[in-house]
Image (tube, rainbow over all chains, first blue to last red; front, side, top):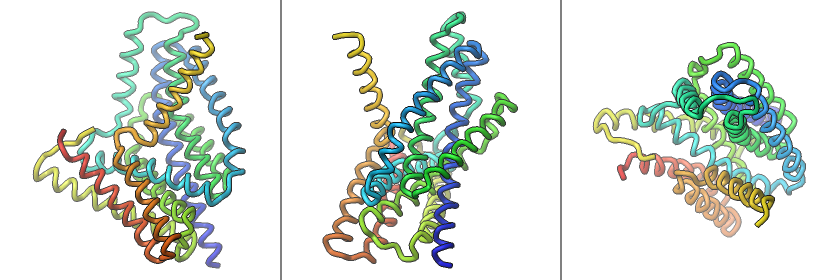
Length: 255
Length: 77
């Protein structure tokens, strides 16, 4: 019974973290591709997307099986450390944005900026190198973050297949909805999603760093849930403290 | 230097830059603190065999790191 609850907790956190992280990155990639397609034409934009997807697939093919063969303890320590760093970066940014100390990620503004940059590059041609490069970089860099999240979480939890399926579902879902609503990706509650992902990544990072260092967590995998609650409360408290301090002093953020 | 070497060096540099931005970026204090956390918990869990202390200290150090980084973000300059 305890083992079942423990396993379910781990699975729910894994699915939530992979789905939300993949969805957030897909929103960012899609914004760039839509801007490229509308301004420079779809042919070169799709070429950039296709080549980026091939490059990502090659990376997964190269590193996926290698990661599976790494001893679990060492893998969890490395993955836990990476997730702690990555998760805290996300959480920090989300807290600063939620408390009004940093501008929120505005997909409309990014779309407008990308369109302005692309229009400044001049007329389009059949094989548009600018459109190809911008679409490739957008999809490859955002996709790389999805690949890292899926590989690290999936291999460490011994659920790589599940992590891949969840990421594909998130990417396809955001892709379909994004194409339907076209330029209205700004309505996606990206900061709230980023906050949730940050909390889950830091929780997994703490848990696996501990496992990798032979710390025996009381309650096994159920500790993950306690860590999620602890970090969510911490993030909430930080946002409230920052809001109060901002109202009192009006100081600013260093980036 | 051949064109192929130039491309491979550019790819290597790009790969290195990605990981630097990914793991350090504009928050080097988080990366440094996580390395210190790992060392501290290693000492507690392996050298002194204080498991109970290790699983309490680990999340507390993570929260302290987050607070430190947020505090740094508030400071001008």
